[in-house]
Length: 157
Figure 1 (cartoon, rainbow, N blue to C red):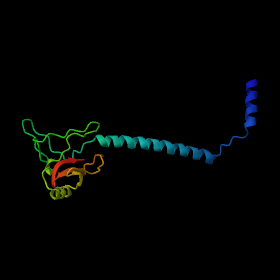
Figure 2 (figure 1 turned 180 degrees about the vertical axis):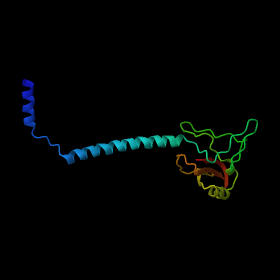
Figure 3 (figure 1 turned 45 degrees about the horizontal axis):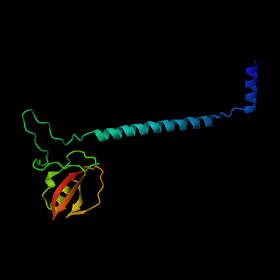
Figure 4 (figure 1 turned 90 degrees about the vertical axis):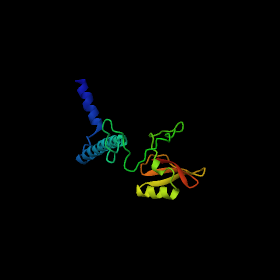
């Protein structure tokens, strides 16, 4: 009985309950917005991660049949005589992203080929002078090294 009396006394001290309908509705809506935003952010992160791991299979060549030698893609030339570039220590490499069809071309011819393939051509080094480039991977870009107006290396990305 004493507990009941203490609870009644505490309720009297606290005063009337301020539970108006508009305040409750506003609080519920705010919590729903937060929850929906958190779920949306999680879905966006998962979709972004999935997009980074997906491969572009739309333009990929068909797999060779057993016993058949592999064929190059539509605009690629296989350059077996040139070893793949060795990445600098501490850098991340996406594998061999060379684009051999640019090697040996003049700078103007390389620009024309890049425009034809809808790529941006960016010069990383010209006659030993290095230019500032960014290192994000973009398949719409070709980074080239030029010596005496001829492309010596080309990397897609």
